[in-house]
View 1 (cartoon, one colour):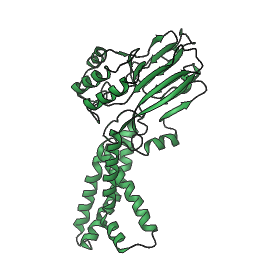
View 2 (cartoon, rainbow, N blue to C red):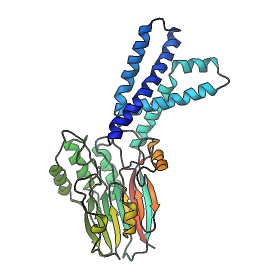
View 3 (cartoon, rainbow, N blue to C red):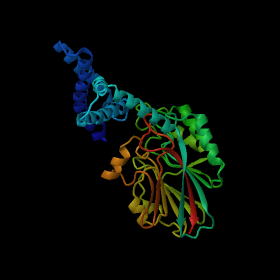
Length: 364
């Protein structure tokens, strides 16, 4: 965490400042033909520092702008220098430096529209367990309410889910965060609690829900818990519940939570292993352990599917985390990781899409 918040930003600042110094200098030379006064170079350096420094917070909006502009500019530089035939207009456009700016506007415009475009993702999970019926489960995770979605929009998606004859509704954490007001927190769970279902709505904490990253949290732990339970939503914090005698749901405390003290093994001890065992964990962790312990399905979120490209790609290539997005079949257990119905930090998404998930559990 210290590396992400301090070391990595510091390492990035120096090359970014140097690059944008020459980027701005190129524009000035194009406009004025030459730089006559040395103090202009000092002003350009100050401008570069002022432009880059707010991006020190790598999880902030300005970091997204600066890093996208840097990458796009580098790509255009490469194209320019390997081009053997450059037209007069191409040279002018390049020297003026306007192309990266236009590209950033286009990319971020698409990112905003993509974040707001929520789709339904459906999976069918087959099991050899002797379940008496098929189960239809709705999974909503990583709403981060207030960032990209208002109450009316959430109501619309909740009504869509309600029409689908859902057996169980699962809320996979980070429904709210440190930026959600107390009123927004109440609005979110009020709408989610109205989703029609047969066997209940169950919720596990994410790493953001309890506003642990805020110096002055907008609501307390108890206010959050009371609001959730008031809306007929059951909190599972390292607990299990029998939906029927053939189906058991396990809900984990978040991996970063101070209350996560029970192991997956202890959680399913003295449990009917012939029942279908579903693990709901905000973060897609302990997959190999849970597979060996005989859990049948794990549902998670947290990763946002790599909210901004190429985070998800890098995560997959370098093996950061156990799973980034989608479906995976292990030796026994199956895993579904959702990209989430919204996103955190800023209303932008280029690395994945926004979704809620429908999982059909069917006896094979």
